[in-house]
Length: 102
Image (cartoon, rainbow, N blue to C red; front, side):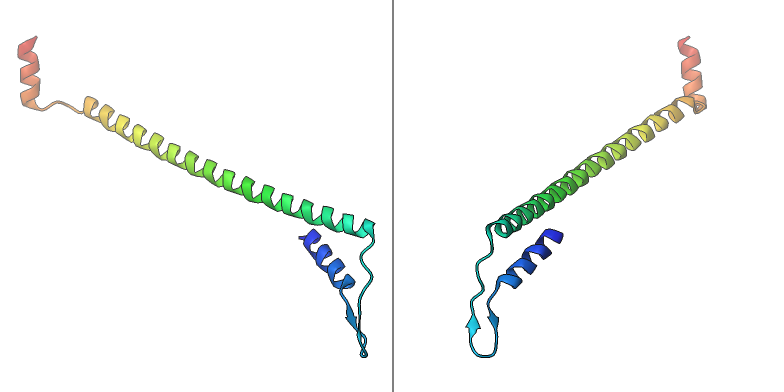
């Protein structure tokens, strides 16, 4: 953001100014200022792209982890239901059938 502000300020300062009589063209920016402007704007754009890509990757990772956690929770619930069924006392008919098979 600072680079964009600096670039805008340098462009504003190098723009022609109205003096009342006629517009006087401003002299071109010195080479050092041009280089500083280009480097500043380039680094600002690269930093912004890095921030955007990092944020997008973090969101994707977070979604993957939340889906994984939801699937793990469902698996645990099914396992608990299975264990409850195994531990429930059998009905009388099932108990007699099991006793007659022994």
